[in-house]
Length: 204
Image (cartoon, rainbow, N blue to C red):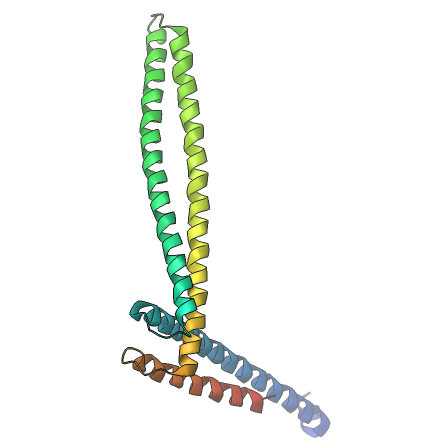
């Protein structure tokens, strides 16, 4: 087989082309992974830049709609968190009541086991109260999950606004001492992204 391979130039060329192609694909995959990493870093920097604009309340008519929208989202988030806090307090109260109803029901059963004759209506009432409280707790837990999902949705909207605002600020480059460090890092990411795009293009 080795002898045939050495003599068959066509076969050697096809094998070399295959190996060369495999190396190119591997190299291109590595470069693509690095490119994606740099893009993610840039997106994080733009998000951070948007947050700084929001924190510093940069005064400019162009950015005001974004700041107003972020202010509304911030209020919605705080209102939702306050509502969740109230629901959690209610759940704690209901669980304590449920435990009390459960203990009362157990005491009635213990009396019955000891040969005493507690009021059957009271036993039934204690059991029903425990069931009612359990259902109420379950309903409030659903509200907690719904509220948490609402807060997550608000956070996603805020992240989108920060990213959009950061992108606009990056394009405009207003002079601001708190933004300079991020400008430098974003420029570095842009150079890296361009480098990897060029290298990937060479391997096509």
